[in-house]
Amino acid sequence: MNSGLYAVALFGHSLPGLLLLTLGQSIVVVCVCFDMVRAVSVPRSRRRYVANTVFRTLALPSIVCMSLVVLVHAASGAWEQVAAGVFVLVAVIFRWHHDTDEDSWWTGKGKALRRWARRKLAAAGPFVAPAAA
Image 1 (tube, rainbow, N blue to C red):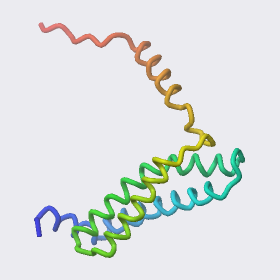
Image 2 (image 1 turned 30 degrees about the vertical axis):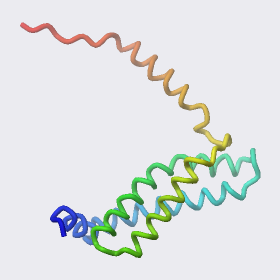
Image 3 (image 1 turned 120 degrees about the horizontal axis):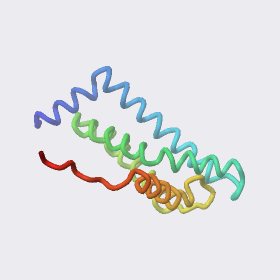
Image 4 (image 1 turned 180 degrees about the vertical axis):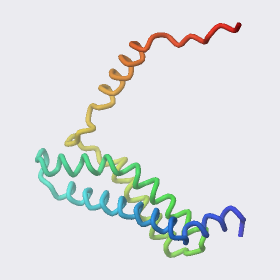
């Protein structure tokens, strides 16, 4: 085994590593549960709005956490866990990428965040390097 993979496996089975992996798994579980609530809720209802907002917010962190869990299991050689983790990872990515929904707080926030950033950068003034003395 590569020494880097050995270090990853060793960290994944230590107490801090197990706590971080457990925290990551709980984020994934919350994300998937809110996705199921979103799937069974009535469109344009408050319940669907909240569930979709939570899912969209937690999708990217849960993808990162699940990728790290899969890496630790692959470094450990637990191939059944790797297969299950990849299945969950692909399912979350698929639902996040292909399930477009307008019942979300994030809808239209890209433009608003860009406008806000442009105003803040314009108010800060130009970035000028100090003259060399």
